[in-house]
Length: 266
Image 1: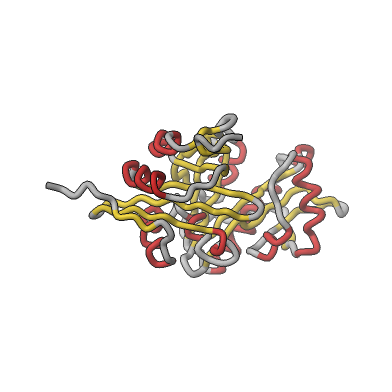
Image 2: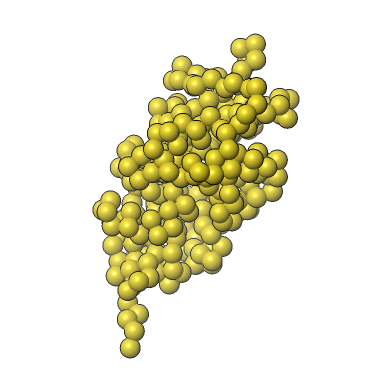
């Protein structure tokens, strides 16, 4: 008779966590990066194992956000959810087969967004070859970045992110028109994540997003990331085309949205 019991480790050390997350390193790229400072102190990785099968749940309780990212076998995830210390609220990122399992424990407030994970390697990367030359940003550019993201209506950004990896922007006459940077990077595990790519509506169609994304991707690969990932709304066709021209490949669809633990009240 086969063993149906899951062995749980609700606060895995780096080696155990990485072994589980590396089974699908592109999907778990953010969780892998969170095994490094500055996010490691806020991150707990629960792992369920049964023979060759495994599941994981990455929970990040950062002062600015809380996130839950499940992966692996649905039954194993269910075992984790039944035993783990779960946050009351957070943002869930889950591939579709695991959404019903998460829904047993969480109520998804509002509308979950259909998203797409994309990835690129050094061999796949096709650098931007246009005339736009974005500039590398520093901590001194934090206020200008906030002003740019305010136009979009609430892209989350913290000044300390500028110290976590490369960020670039395009300016004209001193005005920041487009920018983007690094969500997470770990040279130890070879993963980088691009994020916060945004161009002002009145400056789109000029190649700015392509130039910025290319510059950030180039630097992350040069730093030692063997895979660079990003998230994009599934219905954002223009952005997907930009990333595809740079060599990014579709990896998997997923759902992203706010979640509240069932029975937790308001």
